[in-house]
Image (cartoon, rainbow, N blue to C red; front, side, top):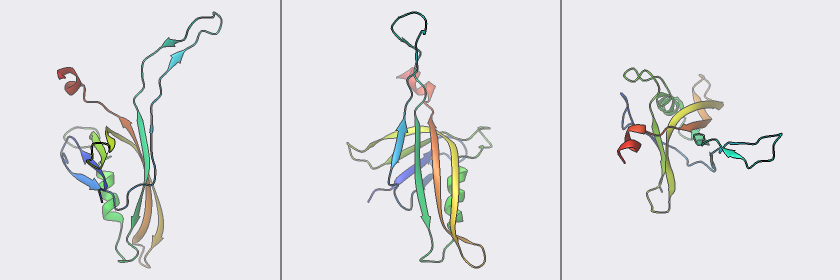
Length: 148
């Protein structure tokens, strides 16, 4: 079974891959297309351009059966959203799930937010179960677009 993967596209951790332990139940991709409406004069709306798309999903981390900490996997996820020492900003990443022709399209962006909810702990405080909500904003590589 294919797993959702988040791959660093640049920086010190380029090509590093985070693979979901469990695939998300839902993924939301949202794109806002802003229009301007003149309130006093009847006229057609004016197109203002597009906003970057946004993606969000929830990941489940479970080490309960093995009594294994989920923190190392969460740390790896956080590395993909931390400031890279060579770039001086977090790296662009690619979210992809599956390789079939009709698979969900890959999403290139930057991590905008990670919210971790710890739900179970061992007696010594080691986290055994958690969820992480991941939110990304589209980040197109302009150099690649100009050459195309």
